[in-house]
Image (cartoon, rainbow, N blue to C red; front, side, top):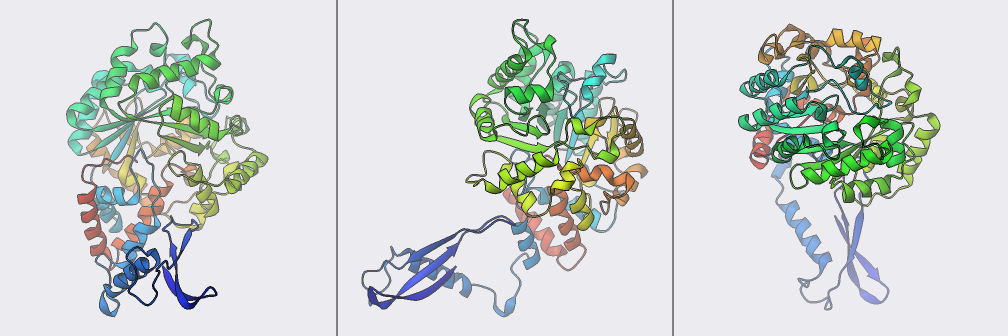
Length: 520
């Protein structure tokens, strides 16, 4: 805030003018408010109702209260600056830096000293409880599994119950359930939800909101929908634009719907049916994967539809990924944006005034372009973070905080190195084999987590290298990039004189967010 007298032509006396800047996120423009003194009697004491004098008095008091001789604030300048700088995070997963830091402090201390073999349990684990899917998305391969009736070694409900208990015993606190389509494996879904509730694990679900059991007239959905409503903390619905565009992307299978309903309308009927059934239970959000066939969706109308018709509190727009050099069999041009489409979208972001943060992630995408985290060339190549990670040495902290378990119990470091959307591509199978860390049915997850393959992976990803062959999938890392960007500087602080300040700040934040859960 700046306060200064201004010669007023209408009044011969000096008039106080105060410029007050409003805090903004890193990289954003800071709005300013200007207040002029409103005191009637300039010779008397300032009026208590004068905003200009009130702001000036407050600022002078704060300046007077600062430690003498330039002493550091309680938690150190660098720690405080870091917390101010990194405020990004998923509103539904609760993983902003100030919430994540107290949960991750022991993991980060291990990373700071290079202790790759004695890492605490991951905060969050993703379980792919189904290998089959109910839609045939252009950017994903999971639907191809169903042609063979699913993977022959998919885990069953009893095995998932044992695995959930193993994770709970180790100290995992949150789970993400996905597939394929988790609604296509209702028995597995029920087993995981029930066991998680018993053991105190919080669960989020990623789903298309479509399944045979949700079709009109089906009674099979009643029990599982009730379990979702009762036990899930959040549900993220995958919807890729308005009806026409969503249908082009997801190509829902006709057999899921009544004969008289074309799939274009039937899928949205099922979505609405599912959203209505779980209303009042978990938080609902929508994820829209931006790609060739839906980039022209009217995003304002779509966001409004998601909020009013599906009860979604937030719409997460993200880019379809698939680094071209990591895909051998698939025609990436079927789903990746063209140069013209990317340029048009960036222009749309630049020209739009973002008045609210709460509706969607579009303001976040605009910040990512403006600050150089994303660029058009990388998105064209299917790897939005490639240049950023190449030019800004960043440690992958996902391998210290998170794990993914496939439908057969195989353990992987993350969804990108698992090649989640490209599992049938022959080059993806090569990456999968390289990044397979063990099987959580054959041995306990606790043993896998700190065994040699995990140690080697943590060491290899001390600096993310998207230009190297083994690191190419890391350029797609839109999911973990803000976690890595915010926590890598914390690890560096823990290596130096600010270590105690970081630990103290984490302890204070742990008190503030004691009951909060975090998903990675």
